[in-house]
Image (cartoon, rainbow, N blue to C red; front, side):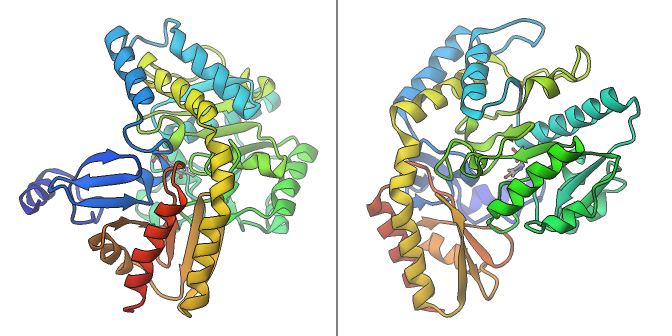
Length: 394
Ligand SMILES: *Cc1c(COP(=O)(O)O)cnc(C)c1O
């Protein structure tokens, strides 16, 4: 493994402090490194692999689509894209979809659509977007501009203009920033990278009401918290709040690089031919994956499973809080949970990895639990046992 890691550090840009393992294959909720060491995976490739590794029906659908047609262009229609868009609009309550190749591109598209909608309505392009502190929306310039972490933004200015930041879960702080130039408010119903903060119902519903009163668009970023992770297809459905523009990615393709932004009819039709485009986005390969993901969510009753298994996970995590005074609290929703420690967790993660458990952090002090949605009680027990043993030595 060390040889590969040495080679990697010569040819890959050093944008990550990677963990010292080289992964080779996956099976169910387990990953194996190239020496065949087994790891229980509670990260799922950062909330991506909802179905678990090696789902045969999923893999067969991908193989069949490779043999049939990998790519055309958005200059033509293709059947998998139509079917995937039908399934996504039905699941989200949105009317129209634009497929992208990543989450950050979904945000780019959402921001452009909000600006175009404002431009069409007001005849001027000088609009503002309100985003939240602790938010994360991606790494491309537009998505970075609305990401509420100054550490990520600092070196890359000037970013796109007209972005202001409010305090998450503080409705007054949002109200104070609203003016006639406000085109959209963007937020994650459950903040992921920022430390696993679910929106308070009064906050999210209050923001929706504020948007309605002022003709502002609500962009909900469900790239991480969507696709069943919280026990609803989209987290905003727990709140009975509907977006004007909704973004999704991560588990949408379960490992195939695809994202999307979707919008209501009124908003979506602000875009006209020529306003936005992509070469790869929505090609038959990735949309065949999306389509199969939606089918499998239904046939395997994944969302029911998330709701059945979540109380067991939260109970076990709460038992750790009771046991260790250095764990401050648990936050999250469904199979998107975080434990906040009173110290940085960066040393805990490599230690559990040595013991065969993959976990990730979310910010300096939070351990994030985002397993494949197919996990069972025995996997939770196994995870807790490894974590408990590592924590007992701290
Ligand atoms: C991961 C993530 C993104 C960015 O998605 P990429 O596919 O990494 O570009 C945007 N928003 C949220 C909430 C995310 O979790």
